[in-house]
Length: 130
Image (cartoon, one colour):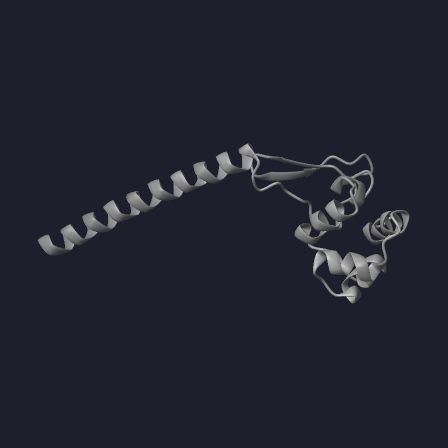
């Protein structure tokens, strides 16, 4: 079942109209309509808001059989079907692992910049000596 079909199913189950859901999400009714008819794929941010408004876990809206694993900054598809998820995976940008990786990357970038600056200083010094 597609994300759009699931959104429609959960919305109708809760007795919420497209207009009402759109109003709660601060989007146009046509946005909800295009999502439900699979003409448009919601961003991860909008999908998260939809899940909250419909009081469902966001994973219930995502494709069945698709699990995405993130480790060492690499993605791998863990689905039993081996198909590639056509929707963007949703990440919790406040997870400790992601924050830790961002900080490590920033430290590495800082070291590279410092190394580059020392190299440039060395080149400039050699140029003055000539």
